[in-house]
Image (tube, rainbow, N blue to C red):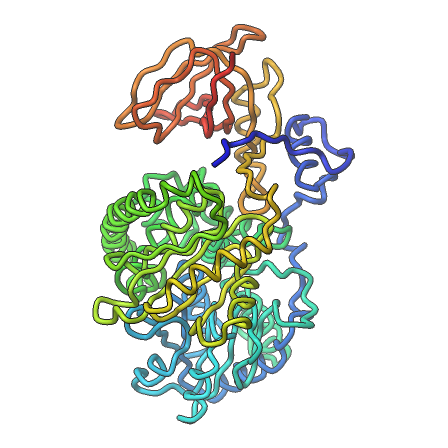
Length: 570
């Protein structure tokens, strides 16, 4: 395996029109992300894309408006990840705001019902609703929708996943990624699709004169929309950044729902300064853990309660489950790294791993960690459940330039019946197959990866925004960077690289560094930390890739370098 290579992001044009108060470094960072003028970061809700061009809205809105008018029993069928949980909460809260009186929800247990609106989930619904609305799933639920319709239920599918060859025979489908859909942004998460459906439904009801006593404020749902969008790792295009920034502003203003506030508190983050990375690395994992190891009903309940004390109790349970998840993940990753140690010396491109003792809810995290280490697409498999070791569930993560779902479709076309079910995106996908077929699938996956991945894509690279000029590693710039996002997928957090001298260091906790770094250009000293370095010792001269962050200690703010990569400099 080749070493990590530092590469510089280049501006995609010349910045213009910026206020003098915007730091030149920040202007350069925006330009490297394709934003050359201030309008590209004016994340006002007024600039949100209108719903009208989102396909399927008219049929879905007409059916929902009739269901509210006639007091139907409406059930929200969610998903067991953070996007699905937040989308379910948005749907339940939003429909109640818009006048629905009988709204309930169901989230599949991945070990009992499988993924999405399956026949098993439909059959478990008691009492049966008159209308099912899926959130973050359904585009692949051909059998589940057919079963619901057979039992006399109407079905609206809202989803953002890529469609397969056959679509379910539902009453309406809203999905920006359907072939031919005219919605300009294909990056909406499942929670974003549901939020758009509610916006369109409110407009319909407004036209019917329903809101004589005042119109519901759907912006109260944006904290949930922000959390689900960031946690699902969809690209933060301009439209998604508008949604996320609006949600973060609500949270920072103390207007978060009780569940999000409790989860932020559990993660020891500050509501007043919360940023997108806090949602992704602290809040989201605590919510996701329930769906991975137990039942996401607990997570949705946390997001739906308005009682702060109850929310804290739910959050404490979710935090405990997340600690269990971390321990299990660490063990599985160690086993996976031992299994792949030999890959450093062979020409492996597509990596498939299976261990009978692994947990199906955590294999996606294992695939993610191994993908980072190997810089290869990785799919990790586990038995479908403790009682079903004959079937496997896999979760994969990919690298840039290799569309994982398309690769699975190619394998499925070449070897029909090998994969039982699959779905997902370019960078992440899930699938099911028989345990006896794992060796055949592993070989087919490697063949597909060899065919589709250009050799230069296999060089692991870390992209930075270049060097910070001497004297600019300041609190002023750190504060601007913190407030300049939201940063995230496809709009990455600013990362710099500079040469430093190690003026001093000491261990911090277990396997972390606390350092004092000297800038050789002007002799200035800078506080720095680096996590998860094991027993390594920092070199006396080093090139570091780092984030410039704000360290808030006992109410005092100071700049700090958060080191992401270090290599000796001679």
